[in-house]
Image 1 (cartoon, rainbow, N blue to C red):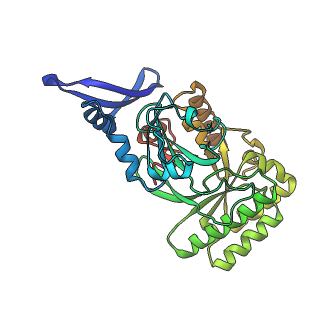
Image 2 (image 1 turned 135 degrees about the vertical axis):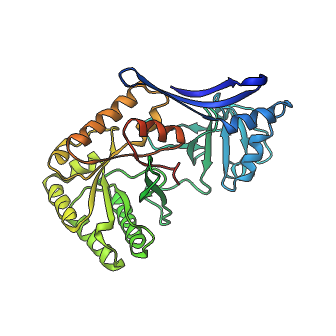
Length: 353
């Protein structure tokens, strides 16, 4: 369980705290983690006068179009960039339900955290209060079905949550991924590999982790060789992840391609584990070096009882086959500490960035 609680202190004082609890870490042992809820305290002080000045001020300070939505789907704040991107200049929207003033499509639990607002894409981030959401609106027209020419990936550190040691950097492509096996997926994979090779050649990154949408095949091996050779980058610094669907599309040729990649020194990861098939055959065959737990399971820890059980099952499979385990999509300190206590110290996500 997790949430907020107000603690009574000596002298009549109170303190807003965030808490996370975990039962039965082992028989007879439970965990309770408390940390100051700084945002809630600031909100409470500002709210004492009856007027909410915190969220409009925070939204205005952000250059990217931002909408702040509370637990009742009411708009608490939005900045000028969001009004312009959504075509709502001069309209008073604060305090109104977002679905009453614009068309909204929220992402399903299995989809990337991207919503649709008036035909605009908006990345959905957890808000600083329970049930709140931050919507970062992408300016411009809605993207076409194929990947756009501009390629602006994000780098998320991979860390050991217990020691704080940085282990690698993950190259993350924001937005919806194309369907595996399509021309759009192949085009995106080529740009991802080119960017990863450039990062490795620059010497700024000791290891770069990427996720590819297409299946492993001879063409992919040739493309990867060419990109690394052109950039003068070492293959041993690259970790390539495939989803279970992509691995299944590869078939026998995919097995040979994975062997060829590993012979070059490239590490192979099973991506999005726990959100779909676990791909036990390549795991048992020793072709997988890292199992990446799906960010969807991490998001589900707050409200889905089975999420913790699924993470434990994925961790058990990784341990059984001798592979590394990495939990992806960490968004806050509570998730970091809880998963580290579960025995998942290798973590990746926007929190570390």
